[in-house]
Image (cartoon, rainbow, N blue to C red):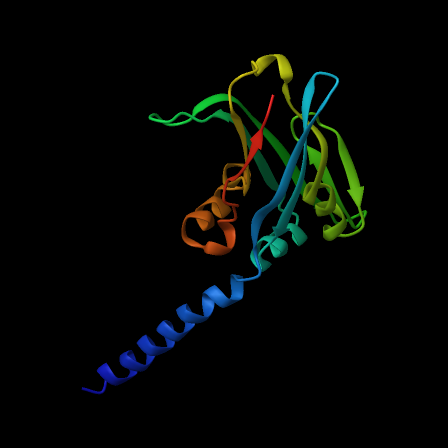
Length: 189
């Protein structure tokens, strides 16, 4: 009989602990706040405002030398009435952030181009990602006039780029499952 009472208290402690977990992560996550496109020299270019709030677990991993990769997934779609939307083009832009303890700098690297830049703080390293400006999206000749097109942007923490032990965390721990909902906007050729 006595064994059931402590187990009952332990159960309540676990339940209360699980209820508190979402509050701990409420301030973390990704969101695309706004997107605009403009045509310049025959290429549609994208300006976006993105909110990137890393969880404490991800920040702690960064501070301990674990690089993280953020992926910007962009798609151009042609909406259809009776079928799913046709994907006209898609691209993925990946950025790696890592902390260098010797220089006490956060390095932001465009994985696609290899270009990198060092920053004193994590917030400063995230700033260029939160304000994408003049990003080449698609050549205008690939979008024939007369059709309707929409763009779609989403941002996520690339779990496949993490070391294997941390990849497991992305399956079971919400603090590591960071992604935005897809944001759609009209793209007129």
